[in-house]
Amino acid sequence: MKVLFIALIFLFLQGCETLNIRKQPVTSGSIPESWSAKGRAGVSVDDSYQSVGFDVEFAAQEFELVLVGALGLGKVNIRSTAQGLWVNHQRTSLSLQQWMEQELGWHLPLSSLAKIIFEHRLNASHEWQVKISKFMSYQEVSVAKLVKLQHQHKPIKIKLLFQEVNQLK
Image (tube, rainbow, N blue to C red; front, side, top):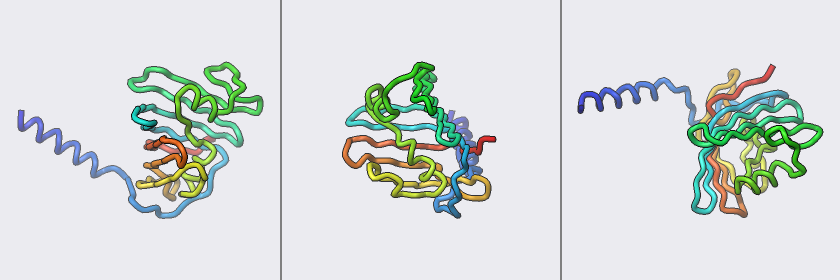
């Protein structure tokens, strides 16, 4: 049993060694017109904690956000177009922030996300305190990999772990 445990730890540490994670940004890049990001979000509101997977695509002024709960339960598709906000293919009169606060109890600052990821702008929003602690490579520049957000006036903390960031074609 000890040998199996030691072998598993060794394999884990060997895998960690191959990760391409930078502590400091090399350079920040410009924001592409169309891009996507995929990852996990851990959200703490008051004393409750939620973990969701997310997949977001931005094209010009429109976006599509897919949130998936823990273990793949509870998938929600949110799409913003010129015609308004659509949640699971049904139009809603609420804004993204209003809908997320009403349904989830928290909201993700999507309007500032591109500046945080690509330009490393820590002051991208007046409502949020932003800390970027790890970076990853994207088209020869660095982008944010691990972002911590803390709301200035509400007890909301969000930790975003980006697994991949891509430019849409």
